[in-house]
Image (cartoon, rainbow, N blue to C red; front, side, top):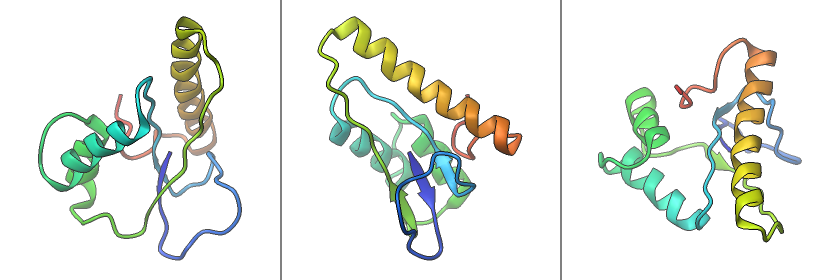
Length: 108
């Protein structure tokens, strides 16, 4: 979950916060996925649709960008993969229900 705040946020991450700009998922390493976002958002390289959208919309160097992540203890690969994708879609759905539109960098 990525958000942009002008002032440093306090408390726990809230997936319904209006400042959320992107929900993403990965079944691999978080570092690898964050690196993909970084390359697309800040180095104009392909590989991450959220990063490409970020670059197109914000055209900055990531100022005021905050990240929150969730880890899982599910070991069954099929269940883990399905659950990860479900959580991402559920967070996007809940955001749309509350705000009437997707987070700015989630176009699909």
